Each structure stands twice: as structure tokens, then as C-alpha cells.
Image (cartoon, rainbow, N blue to C red; front, side):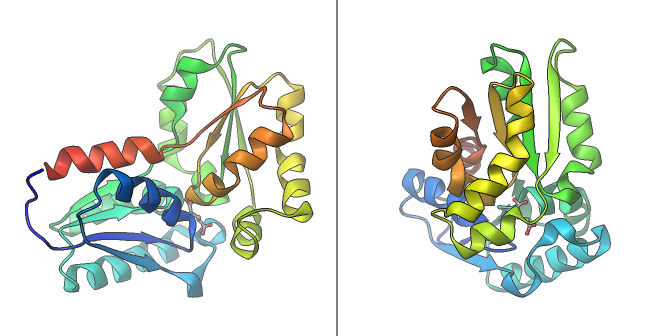
Length: 222
Ligand code: DGL
């Protein structure tokens, strides 16, 4: 594989969520160098104002540029939905963002009912409503703001009974309505992908965007 240069690929997220993306990317691009910026001091982004998240994204971008990142992966749905357009206008570096895998979900649903789990700031973003509007009108989308799920996953990414209870409280009503496909619209939620599948007896499909981002990055670098 021909690499542009040996400079690192910069990653950032409010916490550990982006590591779920980095894990998939490293499998595909094992010879690259990486810097991962985790903004623990400011987690969760999903409950902050839009301006606050913009300022954090700018701060981290400038840090990663100083560390000679050749591309920046915004491994956070909230930061992508809220800030990527503004960052692209302001900085002369390539940004790759994460977007909920709504299109792949639309292709695999049999019941034509899809739930999208995401943070408060993501669910209220223009990008999400635009993505949903672009889909087939026969599909029904239930958008679920999962406030405080990120903090719980940070505490115990492998899951515990409190986390399971929270997830069921968010998802049970959607499953009762006939949802058969769940979109994980936050990179933290990839850590509980297996837990969700297990809770609903593998009857539902759970999709994230990690594979798609890794492929996009690989395309850009080769
Ligand atoms: N991993 C982030 C995301 O994908 C979490 C945002 C937060 O800190 O609330 O949205």
C-alpha cells in the first residue's frame, strides 16, 4: 500500500467512543501511526451547547495539526453532526466524520421500522433530520435521544445491570412498535452492540458506521 507520508492520523472523541472506530481502522491500516485525543474533561458533548462543542472541536483540531496529523477523523457523531461543516470551512486539513448508518439500515429492515439511538445534540441536529428525509417515505424512523447513556458506558463499557436497564428503557417502546433495525448513532454505543443484540434475542439487527469510516479512510490514503 502506498502511503502519502508517515505522519499520524488524528482521531478525537469526547471519551472512549472513538476507540471503537479506531479498532476497526487499525485492522485495515495496521502500518499507519495514530494519535487519539479523548476529551474526558468535557464529556459528554451530547448535553452541551452547539457553540461549546464547536470550541472543543477547534481546540482539538489545532492540537492535532500541531502534532502533524495528515487527516483528522472525528470519531464522534455529536461533534460531526454539530461541527464538521464549520471545521471544514476553517481549517485546511481533511476531516472524516461519522454519520449514523441510516442508509444501510434502510436496506436491511424487513418491518420498515428503524430506531436511531443518539445523543441529545445529535438527535436535534439538522444533519440527522436531513439524512432521515432523504430515505424512502415508506420507512418509519423512531429517533431516540439517549441522554446519559454515554456516561454509563464510560463507567463500564462491557456492561452491567444498570446499563442494561437504561438501554431497555430507551429501546423497549420502539421494539414494541415493531422496530427490527437499530442504528447506533454514537460511537460509544458500539461498545454495547453485542449487549443489545443479546437482550433482544438476536431478533433485531444493530448497525454502526465503523466499517464504512475505515473504508473511506483507506480510500483516501491510498
Ligand atoms: N462518542 C460520542 C458520539 O459519537 C459521544 C458524545 C458525547 O460525549 O455525548 O456522539
